[in-house]
Image (cartoon, rainbow, N blue to C red; front, side, top):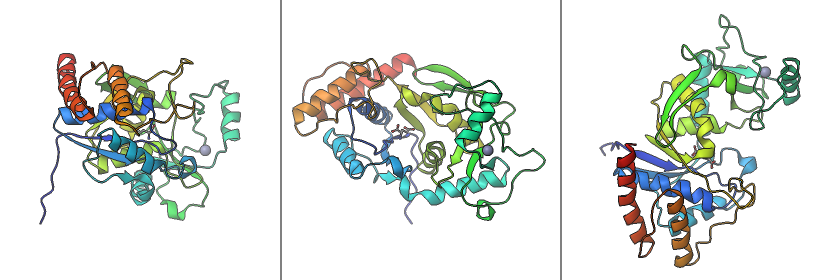
Amino acid sequence: MPSVVTHAYVGRFAPSPTGPLHAGSLVAALASWLDAQAQGGQWLVRLEDVDTTRCLPGMDTLILQQLSACGLHSDVPPVWQSQRGGLYQQALNQMIEKGLAYPCTCSRKAIEAVRHLQGQTNPRHGELIYPGTCRPRFDNPPRTLEKARPAGCAWRLRTDALTTSPLIHWHDRRLGSQQQNVSEAVGDFVLKRADGCFTYQLAVVVDDAALGITDVVRGEDLADNTARQIMLQQALGLPTSRYRHTPLVMGLNGEKLSKQNGAPSLDTRQPQAVLAALHQAARVLGLSAVTGNATDALTAWVVQWKSLCASFKC
Ligand code: GLU
Ligand code: ZN
């Protein structure tokens, strides 16, 4: 029988195939790869195509090609979230059985109306804080599994039931001590949408655990999701990952470079372009320029990364 290899460090890069890799996403890819190498760990690529409505055909292949051209190869075959719905449903069922998840039939309009009545009209990052309209009483949790429910309802996590306090504390390896009161800042958040799509929060947490990920290294724009993800890990009895959020690349307009604001695709057709892109990403991470080809550069940056981490004790 093959023995199961467990690694002390498993990292990942988890792009959504909604567009090609760009200068900003390369920073996160490079940082997660360097961190895994520096710790003698494993690194894998997970394609986050759980929301199929946002994905563009062929982008997964393109991203994998771009990573490969940059010398960033997944140690195990890449995984696609769209093929892992069974795992997400199992996790949701587990939370329903524990009375931690409940069905919600509120429309956006209905949520807006309640928030308005409460005098709270400001959406947070475009998301409305859910006022708890469908949250069941503690003495009457919905233990019936989803099969028995009418189709077309969303499922939410109750953020008031998990720990003694919904205040989640964590240590970010770059940003330091962090905290968020999930109930107040976000409210009971969606695990599965009414259209049947599992949400990013649920899929990330289930996959990070299923793939044995110990360390999440990703862009700072995602830091705000961390408390929700730790809360979900607690709800599912999963270990808490270590987190490090990397600096963002700003565009000329002063906004974060992103697919949404038209960041150009990384040009990986010529080795010189690859080397230049890697150098730009390395600079954002506080690493200095090195000589040689991309392979030489990556090797030198692993050494630099180690001493950077040692000096910051992270
Ligand atoms: N798929 C997410 C994104 O591309 C990243 C998820 C993560 O690293 O947790 O923004
Ligand atoms: Zn509701």
